[in-house]
Length: 247
Image (cartoon, rainbow, N blue to C red; front, side, top):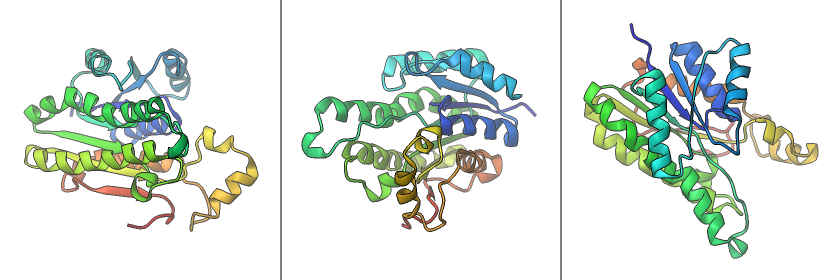
């Protein structure tokens, strides 16, 4: 059986890396990770993954820009083949209370977190429909479900991702393509673990299971939704937040 090709935007980040590894490990996918020049070092990340036993491809581009996203997908397809699984994981934060939030901070987050979902999905969906198989998985956030002070931009974008999921899922449900959302809570990425211990402890107190989630747990959930056997799950939002928010 031919290996499925998976494209993970923001694949070189902490959660993105574990999604790449999970898809390769559990589903034997050919994996392509997108990266952004000036933010990541794609070649260095690729070499590090190879040392760990993972042979991933990389494709560079700003997914918040339509033409750049188009070129990035073209590069991914040229290296690995048509995309069967798309994970929209790229995103940024520009936190500030709304009263002091600048237009640029709003625009940057909407472009990177929400426009990117349109920009990349648009490049791969027709091919999925033609082949009558596809998995689109959008990585949202608990704050897209419950909101968070200081994150009107981020919360709006992440909530919008699931609105996109539900609408598109209805359009392609009878064409072999599923569209789902995962909404992580506090995950122990290197960025989170770099926060002062007392602040981390205060955050953990908000989580009923008493700990942060792990990037591996997000990767496992993505692999589950990407599996061929998960074809009856579409338009869903899987919350992975340790009980912090229950909808």
